[in-house]
Amino acid sequence: MEEKTGNTIIFVVDASGSMGVKKRMSAVKGAVLSLLIDAYQKRDKVGIVTFRGDCADLLLSPTSSVDLAETKLKVIPTGGRTPLGKGLQMGFDVLSQEIRRDPKTKPLLILISDGKANVSSAAEKPLDELKKIADRIQKAKIPSLMLDSEAGLVRLGYAEKLAKMMGAKYMKLDEIASGICV
Image (tube, rainbow, N blue to C red; front, side, top):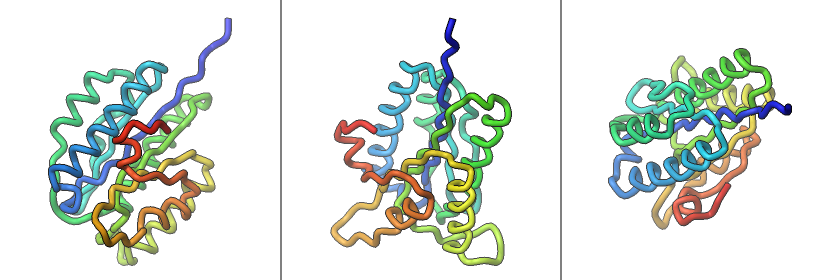
C-alpha cells in the first residue's frame, strides 16, 4: 500500500486597515474558502495566520477541518497597521514546525496582501525585515504563492517585488476570486 503524503498549506492573510474595505476582505475570504475546499478534497491540512496592528495571530492551527477553517474565516477582525514581516515569519514558523513533525509533508505558504508593510518587529525598516524573512523562506525551499490584493488604478507593485524576493509564484487576488485555479 502506498502512503499518501499530504500538503500543509498555511494562509498568511493581511487583515490591516488597507484590507478592511468590505469588498477587498470579502474577495480574500472567497479566495481562501475556494482554496480551502480544494485542499479538503485532497485531504490536505490548512492553517491561517492573520496580521494587523502590531502583531500576527495563528487564527487556525493546521487542520483538515474545512468547517472549522470556514468558521474562523468569518470572524477575521480588520484594521490598523501592517506588520507584514510578523505575519510572514509566523507563517514560516508554523510550516517549519509541521515539517519537523512530519518530514514527508509538502508545505505551501500562501500570502494574501498588497505588500505594503509599515511595521517591523525590530529596530530595522519593514523592507529590510521582509528581505530577511523572504530569504529564509527561499533557503528553506518552501513553495510559496503571493496573492496580490492591491486594488485601484495606481498600483505600487510591492506584492510583486516581495514575491520575487521569496521566489514565490505571483498572482492577483482577483484572478483567484474569478475562478482561475492555482
